[in-house]
Structure formats: C-alpha cells, structure tokens
Image (cartoon, one colour):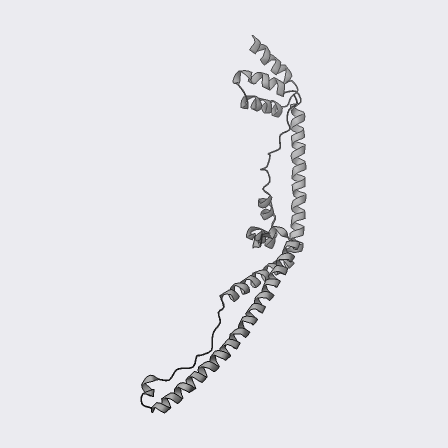
Length: 224
C-alpha cells in the first residue's frame, strides 16, 4: 500500500516535468542506495530537476565558450611567438651540440722526436753515437718545452670557448623561459610543447588541454 502511494506520488510529482528530467531522476534513483528506496529518491529528485538540467546546460555552454576563447588566445599567442621561438630553439640546440662536441675534443700533441735507430747506430763510432744521443736529448727537451706551451695555449682556448658557449646557453635558456616557460622542464626541452608551438594547430592545443567530451556537463547538485 505504501509503495503504491509512493508510486502515485511520483506520478503526480512528475506532472509538467520533461522526459529528460524524469529520466535523470530515474537514473539517479537507480544508481544509489537500496532498490526499495528508489521511488522515494526519484520523488525527492523530481522537484526542480528541469531547472537543474537547464543550469547544467548553461554551465556547459559557458565552459565551452570559455574554452573556445582560451583556444583562440592560445593560437594567437602561438602564431605571434612561433618564429622567434623556433629561432631561439634552433640556436639553443646548436649551442648544446657545440658544447657536447667541445667536451669530446682532446688535445692532439705534435709529433715527438724520433730516437736514434739502434741498428743504424751500431755502425757508428762510439763518439758519433754519443753525439746523436745528445742531439736527441736536446731535441726531446725542446719538444717537451714547446709542447707544454702549446698544450697550455690549447687548454686556455678550450676553456674560453666553453665559457662562451655556457654563457650563451644560459642567456638562451633565460630568453626562452621569458618567451614561453612551458617549453622547458628544468633545462630540458618539453618536446611535445615545442612541437605544439612549432605548428600552432588547434587540435594540438585541444589535446593538450584535454576538454570534457561533448555533452558532458558538471552536474548541478539537487537541493535537500
């Protein structure tokens, strides 16, 4: 008897409610709590359900309008920044490659004086052998001195080149962070964002923002 009265109340409460509203209440009633209390939950849901649905639609419409405005703003900013950004990214990649190449460079010494040939020396007189050894020792000492100076000049140029490239890299990173900080994570490129801002395509920005699927609205809670 009580259930019949409750069902009758649901029918009366549903007078003037849209089919979408009644379906919303049936779905909510079926989705929560014991089945026997379904009619009671549906009865509580019916008052104002159409207004709530209308509010959800308005909220969804506003959200999509805002998303479209953000998309247009993102695309406009992307097109404005694209050329200077691509130039800067290319320069930074080139600087990093130069630094990597520089770290792999090693010093290439000049040829060392060749010592006297022992087999050939055996044919000479002892005093000639001694003279050849003295000449070799003098040449070796001169080579070592020249090589020490030559290596020092190379290391100084190497340090200077590295300092210049590292300063250049810091400046390029700072400028890229100022232009578009989303392109970097620490000092590393966010390659997906670099690609996104390289093409300035709407679908790339839509994937990045991951909007709600079509027709999905943030529910407006029922009162009471």
